[in-house]
Amino acid sequence: MKKLFLLLLLVITTSGIAQNLLKGTVKDLTTQENMDLVTVSTKDQQNNTISNTEGNFQLSYPDGTQTIVLTYLGYAPLEMNLTNLPKDNIFYLEPTDFELEEIVVISTPLNEFVEQLVKNSYNHLNAPFLLSTYYREFVKINDTYSKFSDGLIDYNVDKRRKEIKSDVVVKQSRAFKLNSDEESMLAAEMTSPLDLRKAVSRDCNFGVLDHVFGKKEFKKYSFIVKSQKDANGNDVQTIYYEPLPEIEEPLYAGSVTYDPAKNLILAMELYMAPSHRQYSKLRNFLIIKARLENLGYKCLFKLTNDNYMLSYSCVYGDIYIKNKKRFDDNIIFKSDLIVTNFTSDLSSFNKKEKYRDKDLYQAGTNYTEEFWKKNNSILLTAEEEEIISSLKDVK
Image (cartoon, rainbow, N blue to C red):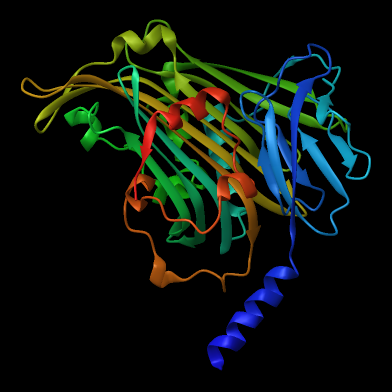
């Protein structure tokens, strides 16, 4: 009788939060080009997704939703009533008419300024909170994709000893690998070197900026700060950096965009400067030698109803590894994380289900619905669909 009651309760609960699905494509109004990384949200910002590299997106939203909002830095936000959507489901964003102008951060050395910017951004993260995310990983050995995995992951985020920490539960997942008759020894053994358990803490601790703005690293770079107006006439400022040409080390280029009125970081981008990749050296690691060939990172934050929150992050890299007997290969990897929902209510997080593996591939295929079609996941591009079809399911 008790089991029957719980089943009825589940049916009643889920039937009260019916979800709807909107698919569309985002284009630049001026160039007609597809736009990726456009944030598509319900107006209350409780349901979010982004467009893929083809400009396509899918947004899952609850009954009662009336308006969606599309936003991208440098473009006017687009609000659309769900009863008046374009018939072809193509959404056009209009570039804001602005000119970049160089500005100067007065009285404060730039590395100290960024340190304060990080401190203020960190303090505005109102932990504890629960992030619902869609996460995916690609792994490629030389020219052949060897593994893919994606899933719905909850991050229970808290501040411990003055830094962000998180526990992870994998709600649903799927995993694919290269067909066994084609699989090399390296492909069989190698999964993504990224640790999904630390993805949110990596972003929310802003540690990536230490590679550029740390006390020792700061002197190796040149900087320029530029300002622009957003669609509402508010200032948005960006620090651009690149390595000094005389420094013969593998250094980075990129940018930090922030809201100067609130002193909050809005976006971070970092990648190996093409001019300095040549200085990356082969290093010894136990039984192999390895060299970092390329690395890229992008992270977006947003402020919604006084909630400052991670929105999206992406990491990609290329590592060359060598071993006399077994390996002489490049491992290329990429991960995407998109925050689809957030709440301060932690009651749904079950610590007994805490995920302990480093990569998502180890979770295998374990789902109760086609979550990649029904939730606010990143839509696969045609190329990515082809990649997955060449791999086989891992139970």
